[in-house]
Figure 1 (spheres, rainbow, N blue to C red):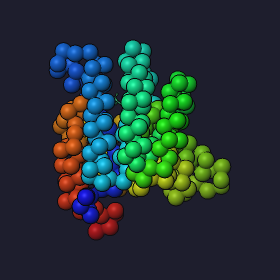
Figure 2: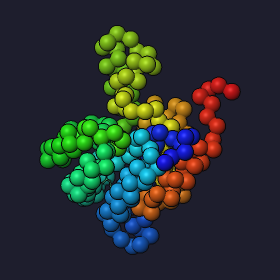
Figure 3: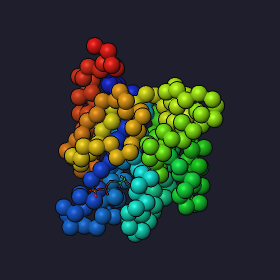
Length: 226
Ligand code: FPP
């Protein structure tokens, strides 16, 4: 059971697959494959730690700039991941949510994702996966939709973000030692705590997630007050 001051919603920028592989003189694809294992471990850890929502940055709108071969490795990994993990997601009461413009992916992936959304819709704990996601694009889209309704206020923008029905973001983690947000959840991070960890994503697991949640629990959050 999680401590009462543990975060409800944790998001992770999963970084360092390439460097992890390079250190072992292995191809980047091997790093991504092991990154997939870390995703599986972390989803389980989120359940152990009783998190309500885990959001993972799996493919950014800027990732299309990578080499074709790497993109296709990531797509194949995604196909296999859904095939392998979906039954366990359903059995574990996970509800899948996608943030981002996932319809730009290949039709067979879109079908698999929509099947996964449908099969997990009654889950009580959320795994949100950012796919073809960019925060600036998300905010611009939300502002456009809010304007169409007549009023562009922070609350109206909130209602049109992909994350509208998720709990507020409490904690954002980035692995691999890089200290930047890379166009991830810019709006939602307004009051989130941030933790930058010196671990490459394929090495990430329950102890890292637990340590980050414990650090979060000790921080005093002010939300602009004193
Ligand atoms: C960063 O490593 C990681 C990504 C490009 C995206 C995350 C992808 C995975 C964890 C693979 C599995 C995902 C799913 C949902 C099955 P990098 O290549 O940027 O690392 P580097 O900065 O060391 O080169």
